Length: 507
Ligand SMILES: Cc1cc2nc3c(=O)[nH]c(=O)nc-3n(C[C@H](O)[C@H](O)[C@H](O)COP(=O)(O)OP(=O)(O)OC[C@H]3O[C@@H](n4cnc5c(N)ncnc54)[C@H](O)[C@@H]3O)c2cc1C
Image (tube, rainbow, N blue to C red; front, top):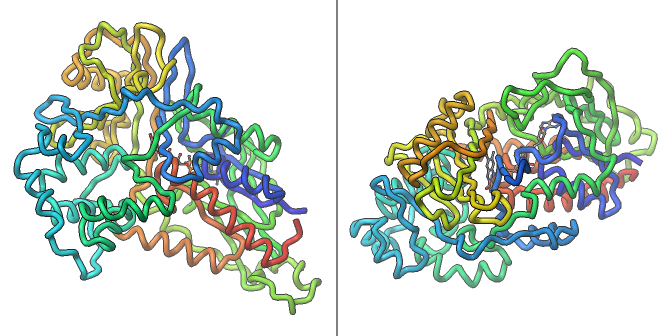
């Protein structure tokens, strides 16, 4: 009985492993680092709870809530304080609440009369029909105006991708916005008339999706999935080579601890291997790659014609004959190294309540580039969920870096704290020094679905057809949000199960 190999114990890999196991298909999860969860990292310390990676999970698909229930986590799910709905955007150095209704939009001070007029004109703008791939910035300026780009979209892009709106692709990074124009001819008309279609599909728009976490932070989810998988999760094990054999894939594993970066680097393995590492081989019926695009580029993948899908006419002896080395050819995965992953530093600071002038009731604040601050935005973490800070204190989680200021993310922790405190002083009236501070650097945080990203997605589809039994899933393929990656992990299970059934692999 050969198991399915899953490379990467981030949320994608663990979700896929969890559901394959529930289908009775044996799995083995290989994880380069010494922990599960990938970029998800929650830290409980002295009454504080810090989230360094994602803070909230948006329930954009029924598959997300289903995973929580299937994992038995419903009692530990935390829905945010209803008061925490307010989101703020900075304009003229001050926080202004984002409007929550059409009436609110027409009365807000966040946008000028010009921007409000642009919204009224939007349904009458012609749709683009020449098929040219646009950046989100080009699209927004074409359909709305520059102010919308600077004030709204720039912050949205910073909040989701830590990206550059002039480079991010409308088609790949914001497919739902593109679909509104394609299907309804307008964003406004699509918002109104698309509601029924969205209801039918069960999908919920990101701005309306319920968000949640767990009592001890998002880390609860990967930890619970991993606990249910037990010995099937192999930590400190980097997959370095995949070789196609007649009845599946041979994996070369490099086992042993890898050195940690000075700040906690979430993703380690590959080229950072230490001389103490041990190499072993193992065989699997199929492989799901749930790592990162930049590590994918370092994988050595050999596949050959003899291992193409077997038809019933092929004799059993031939089926189980390993493909001879000289029939194998290396796959060129180097293009995946071109995918940009700018660095992001998370700075989690705790303050005494009386040291913060702003009430900080709400989700948090997003900061447009034109306002000239160093931080990209701040989440009011302890207003969002209970038990994130000791009594009389609050936790603020800020992000630095991304495409806006990649060099700043790499500063030493004390500088990150100092420049965050300075921005928070101006924005929220923070005085005094933090009672709790923790920084984590994600040297390569979030993949940028820039214009031209279709080339990489196309390549993955091509490789999957060239190398049957090798599957790709995760944040670099199916969307960067936690919800997208869970859905990706759920969906790949069906593809793998179908493959195993049609190729009649031994299980
Ligand atoms: C700072 C930050 C904040 C975020 N905030 C939010 C948020 O608030 N809401 C939201 O919805 N999303 C957020 N995201 C995005 C979301 O968290 C990620 O897209 C998602 O968690 C990625 O999961 P994944 O399993 O696809 O990849 P990862 O979490 O990157 O996991 C991949 C795993 O594969 C392992 N691996 C790679 N190569 C190999 C190999 N060769 N052998 C063995 N193991 C390997 C890695 O070590 C890693 O553990 C945030 C991301 C970051 C970085």
